[in-house]
Length: 139
Length: 139
Length: 139
Length: 139
Image (cartoon, helix red, strand yellow):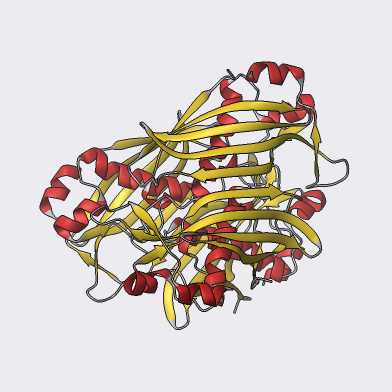
C-alpha cells in the first residue's frame, strides 16, 4: 500500500457559487495544496529549497482526471486523502479521494512531473527523473 | 461538425504562481467561463432565467479530463474553443482546446449534466434530460 | 474589550504570485472567511438559516481599508484576529489583525451591513438593522 | 489631469457567491489586473523585464481603501478606470473607478510601491524610488 496523507479543509461561503455548491475549480485549488502537503508530510523540502539543491521548481500537472460524486457546500469539512500510486520515470500518478465523513465527494488522478527550468527560457520547463531520495520518502 | 465557440482571455500576473506559469486551477476557472459563454453564444438564456422556465440551475461537472501541453504565463492571450461533442440523455460531453496562436496549451473533455434542485434539499441537485430546444441551439 | 475570534490558515503555493509572496486578493479571501467564522464562533446561525428566520442573506462589504505591513509566503501559518469594534445602526465595523507569530502582516477595517434581498429584484440588496440577538452574541 | 486607462471585464458565474453577487475579493483580483494593465498601456515594460533592467519586481500594495457602491452579477460588463493621482517618492497612489455603464460600482485608492528584492532574502522586498522614465510614461 502506498503512503497516504490526509489534508483537511473547511469550505467557505466564497468557495460556493450562485447554485450554493462548491464552484469546481476550487476543488483543484485544494487538490494542489493537498499535493504539496503530501510531499511536505513525507519529508520532501519545499520547492524553493529543491530548486537550489536539485534544480526542481515544482511538480506541474501534465494530465488530470476527476470524477465529482457529491456536491459540497459552505460549512462542510472535507478531507483529501493523497497518495502516489505509480512512478513512471520522469512522471508519476498522484491519487486523491475527497471525503466528507463517509461521503465520497470527488476522486482525482493526476499525472505530474518533477520540473526544472529550461536553460535560457524564463518560463519554459522540462521534466526530470524523480530523485531516488525523494521517491523513497513518498513510498 | 459541432458548433464551436471561442472565448478569449488575457493571462494576468495574479494567475501565475511562483514558478511564473499559470497556476492550473485557473485553467478550470476559464474553462467554466468558456462553458457558460458557449451556451450564451448559442442563444441559451442565463441560468437564473432557465431556473424559472425549466428548473435548470446550471450545468455542474460530473467528470473532467484535461491534458496540459504547454505552459502559459502573464501577458499571454489565450483562446478557448468550446463545443459539445456528444449528447447522452441526462449528460453531455463538452470539449475545449486552449490555444495561444498556433500553440496547443491544454485540452479538456468534460461530462456535465443539466441540473435541477432536488425538492426540499437546499444544496442537493439532480440531473434532467437536456430540453430539446436547448440541444438544438448548441448543435 | 470586544470579543475577538481567531482564524488560522496555511499559505499555499498557489496563493503566491511570481514574486513568491501572497497575491494580495487572497488576503481578502481569508478575511471574508474570518468574518463569517467570527459570526459562527459567536453562535450566529449560517446565512441560509438567517435568510429563513430574518431575511438576512449575509454581511456584504460597504467599505474596506487595509494596510499591508509584512509579506507572507507559502509554508507560513497566519492567524486572523477578528472583532466588531463599532455598531452603527444598519452597519458595523469589523476589525482584523493578521499575524505570523509576533509579526504583524496586515490590518484591515471593514464596514459591513446586514443585507436582505430587495423585493422583486434578483440581485438587489438593502441594509437592515442588526437584530439585537445577533448583536448580543458578538459583543 | 492624470492619464486614465480603462480595463474591461466580464463578470462570470464563478465570480459570484451564493447571494448571486460578485464575491468582493474578485474586485481586488480585477483591480490588480487593471493596475498592471495601466502600466503596460502607458508603455512600461512587464515586471520580469524591469527586474533585469531596474531590479523592480512589481508594485505591491501598501494600503488600499475601497468603497462598494452597487452590486454586480454575472453577465455584467464592468469597466475599471485607472490613474495615478499622486507620486510620493518611494510610493504612489493609484485610483480606480469601477463602472457598469452609468452605474458607479466601486471606487478604490491604493498606495503601492516599486519593489526590489532585499539582498540575500528570498521573499523580502524593499521600496525604491520610481524611476523618472517610468513616472513620465504614466503621467
